Amino acid sequence: MHLVWGNMRRKKTRTVLTLLSIVVAFVLFGFLSAIRQALTGGVSLEGANRLIVRHKVSIIQMLPIDYQRRMEQIPGVAAATHQTWFGGIYQDPKNFFMQNPVVPEEFLDMHPEFVLSAQERKAWLSTRTGAIVGRKTAERFNWKIGDKVPIQSTIWSQKNGSYLWEFDIVGIFDGRDKNTDTTPLFFRYDYFDEARRMWTGMVGWYTIRVKDTAKAAEVANLVDAEFENSSAETKTEAEGAFVQAWAKQIGDIALITASILGAVFFTILLVTGNTISQSVRERTGELGVLKAIGFTNTQILALVLAESCTLAVIGGVLGLGIALLLTAKGDPTGGMLPLFFFPARDVAMGLGISVALGLVTGFFPALQAMRLRVADSLRRI
Amino acid sequence: MSEKSADGALVDVSGVEKVYHRGSEDIQVLKDLHLQVPAGEFLALMGPSGSGKSTLLNLIGGLDHPTRGTVTIAGERVDQLSDRRLAAWRARHIGFVFQLYNLMPVLTAERNVELPLLLTHLSRSERKQHVAAALEAVGLLNRAQHYPRQLSGGEQQRVGIARGIVTDPTLLLCDEPTGDLDRKAGDEILNLLQALNREHGKTIIMVTHDPHASARASRTVYLNKGQLSREQLN
Image 1 (cartoon, rainbow over the protein chains, first blue to last red):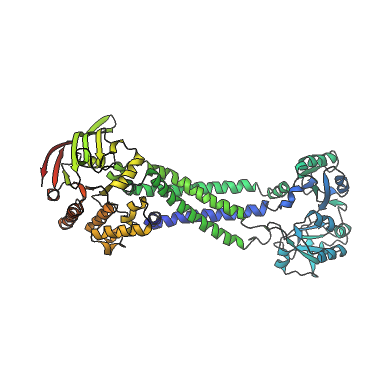
Image 2: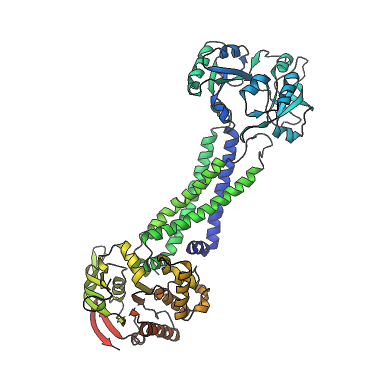
């Protein structure tokens, strides 16, 4: 290890610059992972048995309320409920968070990942203008139970022509899992449906729970077949696919992040590979001496790989650490990316990538060092 | 392993040829060379550049294979060993001292001397003891924590010798050990080698251009165009 450390200190500027480039790559990796998580990761494990039914044409087309009853009669469907995009603004358009009207009992039954106390649940059921809000948004705006919250809808006007809706905060829910989004506000559909001026009896989309996850695809086909040739045909898909379809309005996030990271790591591969290769070339004589005193080819190979891996892992750990610190503050957009965090799974993957980076960048220089003939290398001193 | 071959020589080079191929050209560096070195001898190899001195030293040290002939050291046919076994054999039996010292610039004198011991099963404290003994033998125990750049050429070469003897090898091979030193420092190195030979019975083969250096050896053999031309007892 003394030799590995010593060799890294040999050309300090070169080592530091290479290290910095690796650090930057891993910080970028952390940020892109957090963004991808924010855009596509909002599906809890609970969502595995949930399907989303939306209008076949697009998510902004509405579906009739009576679809729910018909869906509940389809074999394989355990329960169904609906939501509608409200698109409201609280005080300022930049204060973005989702608000949807729902049917409280059905909604809470469908989404056990939203944790609400029995008392708050009861209050919601008994308060017509009641709304529950996620902990993150409640803390963001310092809302407390009992507060009256005005929200300006960008879509829905009331029968009196006003776009301003008022809700009574009756509950603040927490997320059961780390990736549960606790930014939305949910209010009662009955209040919404009676008060809105247009599209009464229409909802945004349905969530259905299937009895058997293994038969989810079959149920999805049955649902779509049920409404085929109607004025509002449906498209049923897994909740995960639905969330990703939302994200894909921006673009294929996975492809975009993979492409950026691919380009970054390829560049880092060349930079680090060149550094190690140059370092090996400069030390041909020293490697020859090590071989002369009895180091085997395998030990020389391991020495060079240890150097490249040490460099890559130090850079990787620093970069991932910085990314963790920077993403720990949460959503940098003030509400657009509520699930912005660097998942532990991706941190582990980053560590794996750093080791792989070390092995790949060190492989050819190590092979070159291993194949050096002792007598030849001593002659090059 | 016996320490000597049948006829009593520690080093027995017999009928050795070495041919290098450069493109379509064959360059014969050593031709039908025979050399025996008894244990405890301090042998100097002299000759003009290109006469094959270093090549012969490389063959004896197991750094290269002969094209023909045999190299037997302490009863073992070195020319027949695979690269992997040769590496282990070198670690056990050979100490090298190079003209340009060839110390690792990133390691202290102590760590440089310790390098060959990393290939043994010695514990850390045992290694430390051996390193201290080797540095003491070359008079540099007080410079153990110095890096090569903080040492003079003569001191660096003494560290190189300490590294060469730290494993107590069967044979110490020196390739122009004074070639890069001034006369005074060179003399100190030669005194040291002589002491290792006389007081510790170390067998030494030294390649040199310098008659002053070869005079310190017990025997000098001269190479010319890949063959032994003459020898002289000092």
